[in-house]
Length: 580
Image (tube, rainbow, N blue to C red; front, side, top):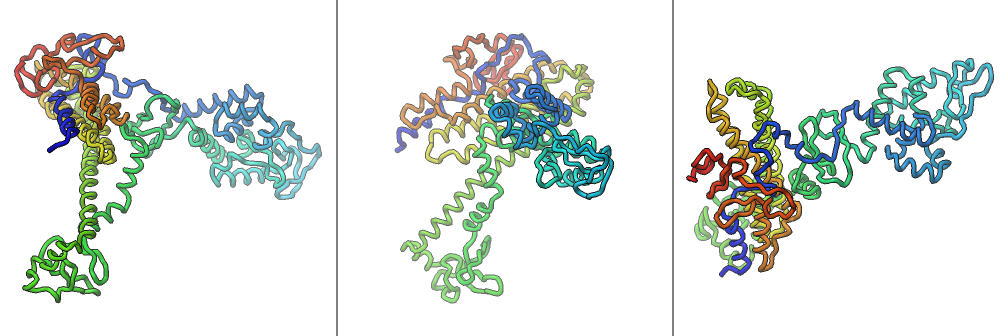
């Protein structure tokens, strides 16, 4: 007989019925219809807590920081640059350290408080080549040690060729620690070395800065400036690549960075190879090499040079087998030994490895499938933007500005495929003993897949009719309304799903009261349902003071069967074909 908890689990899933999804904000809006101006990019709908920087932007930010430090501390710009580089481009840290102990800071970075002039003589001896040169052809850092132009150029060029260490260049005199800044590089180095030094300084501003990172996409030259402690870590670069600021892996909400690291390691590690070998092979009793058997009888012959012949079931010598032991396709010895418990441990280990492998394969295949679908959706989005949108605009006599709802639908599909992909990593690491959470999670995941497939089919298959049409079609505006509605409810559902998974489905308990908690969580994600069976937008009971909207306000009616938002002009649901 099922336990009470199991019965509650079942009731929990059934209590949601066949509701499709509605967000906490509802479908309503202040506008009466779907204007094209409402269709901005998905990323722009969220308050961004980051800025994408081009090379020009990076240089501008870097110059502003140098100017601020130079002004506050009353030091030259080259000195401010050396200070900022030493303290990882943190202005606050430079100020703190400088005003606590200026002398210590100067000594650490090689900035002399009072620069020393070169000896006032007609000729000076170069400290590297030991040749005498007129004083006008000699140069020195703030320490006053003179070196000829050729030696300076060779010294600077060699340092720059060695890499970013040239940003911490010091006086060539072994006993001197005076800094050599960009001011001397600009005067003494050739153009090629100046460009390299400038490039290293630019890279240092990004790579040593706690608030800025390069976009990790191959070939991308943009950087991202992030506002710490503000909202999501997800970044969407101008190159269309989305990544996590915290770990720089692909954007992975609702999964945390630790889970992503474990999942990526598992996908690339040898552990699953060993599991496969353990689950699908047996070691030769003589040489211990693993052998896979995929067909044929129980008579196994190991490969040369071993050539040992044995029984696949009991691993005993084949010379001891024959008609009396069950022939070629059975083994009485194995059955008898199994009943006596001789093979229990090895069989148990093999069975555990097989179950573990099957479970991992289940989640990995679906993770990889959604990744492939996302890549295909990105390719379709590019094709739509570059080729099909113009064709559709001409065929339906619609300006391209009025067709943004199609691009938004594709962007939403790409984002939802990414979220759905990572829910499989989330599910793999969901604790086995938390049955209520697992059951509810799988239900929510199934609903997400179902809703996304509806949106994908609409924008991929149904749109093709209008692309193939030779003249404008009267029902194109109805298609616009349908696709826009599907995009909206899909977005709301996935946003709520992500929030629920990020909190660990905390409203789903394991006690007898967990049904109530689960119902509350499901109503948050799927939308509340009135007694009459129609969706009541979650905003109507939020208590947040937000305006209350319903479907009728925007000329929609909600299907009692699937809750799809249909235009009021139709009497049959466009999704499930049930009558109104």
